[in-house]
Amino acid sequence: MNTANEVEILLVEDNPRDAELAMRALKQRHLANKLVWVKDGAAALEFIFGPPNNAGNSALRRPKIILLDLKLPKVDGLEVLRQIKADAKAKTIPVVVLTSSREEQDIVRTYELGVNSYIVKPVNFDNFSEAVAQLGCYWLLLNEPPRPTDGADKPNHRL
Image (cartoon, rainbow, N blue to C red; front, side, top):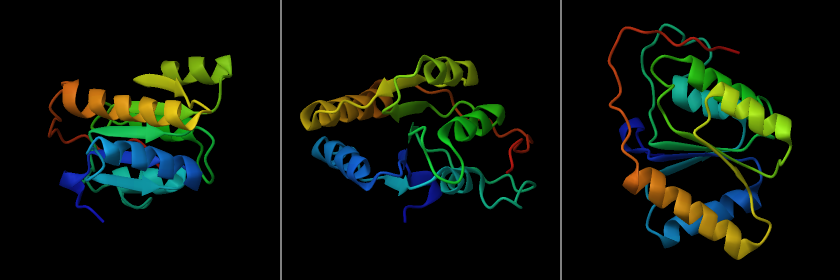
């Protein structure tokens, strides 16, 4: 696995087919060298914040972008998003929801929680690949994120 400082993309996706398509699209654009894939929300939170009983530890992994599905096992994507955006150190990490849900309540709720973008997964393979590739290009190459702060803030999350 990549070290914390090297991870550029955290892909949080429980569907192996969708994850493979996303990784393939990013590889075609040479954007997947520093990608970590986790299959559920609990694993995503542990990757970012460390183990659940680690609340006092200030170690935080800061990928350049998190691609987050909403319908996840263990901890759903809305809760993952809520915990990321509630944490003083993690809230500036860009989170893009990449989901099959077109439900208005999901769209509204994610924006209320601070999502940076909401994208409905295209059904067509070529369209899906192109959407993921464009996401990677924008967030990794064009977007200018704020520098992380080194304050003494402690994570606000825990299951």
